[in-house]
Length: 272
Image (cartoon, rainbow, N blue to C red; front, top):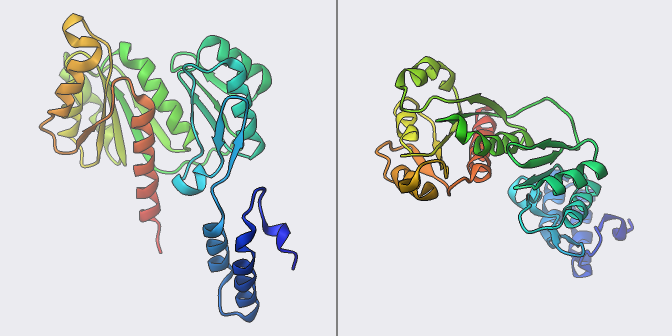
């Protein structure tokens, strides 16, 4: 068998003898096909591709479950296009966060299938339009002003192909509003709660559910909110044991963690 056919670009030839031995064991029936594939992948070095401005990690999905995500701030529109092109050519689903209007315009010209969420400042390009989702995450906002951060989380969950439900404007100033929606929190694998001001909502949500609650403080609020620091400190001091906290305005980070939880829960629930 020609081993060069099994090697991705940049493959380390020092592993050729090891691969040959594995294939011999497969032919003799002492190793299964799945085991051989697993060990060949383990021998493979991490792969990357260079653009004019970036080194794109093409091994991220294998290691971490999802491809590399592009943080838009500070990048030129052309740099964004080049990174998208590399990921797309390798069959990866693409997600960019904190995308400016010029960046989004350039991406949509080159990738007409991409979806731009101007409120969440994201651009998402899916290489498969399958409607199948895994797991269930609920995104909750305290107020309408928190919606941009929530939209970043929602788009991230769509990119991760997680089932997502959204509950908006149920902050603690009107506590009955959350109670009216409490039934929608049931059966969630994880909940993302986005809130500014004093950041109290995650604790209230946490007291109603038996799943992880990932709190996102936002920079919404008056002077003493200190651009979200007050909400951050309030959430870090939550008395609800199931609440954990990400950085200020970090909708992407909260959703990514929630999506990993949801997918792992769905995988564990499958019959063996």
